[in-house]
Image 1 (cartoon, one colour):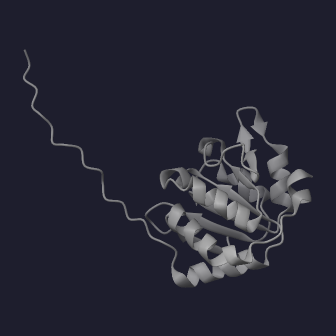
Image 2: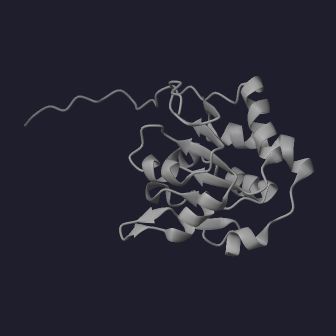
Image 3: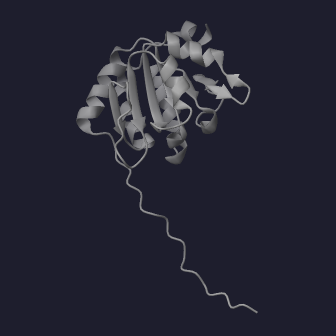
Length: 178
């Protein structure tokens, strides 16, 4: 019989979870305040930081539909008012999500990776104004974004909600249902 030695107890790796830099946060908030038809694209970083409730609150505060890559299903319940669904499925690209992106005036990408395989369809259909909040430890600039940073999705969304909630916008219901 082989002898099995006991292994050291599991210890999770330390993870650096930065919040939004104050100057970058102000740039993001200025863009969000002036947007008339924002769309939120939420990726796996929202799941990784357990920020689903904050995402739903941010969508309500911004009156913004939330779309997500297929690999981030679960970032928002389909029962939520502002959940617009997956951008693509194994059957192809969702035309409703493409229309939302094309008709929007600002895309807030949160919890996405700049090198993700599914980012191409998002960038191809995004409006000129893009805010990109990635979730990797290293700072990678997203090409084409007006503001690009790395932050913990939960901390970033909490900051957005805290600073914008008193000024919640009126919903453009037609935008979501066109």
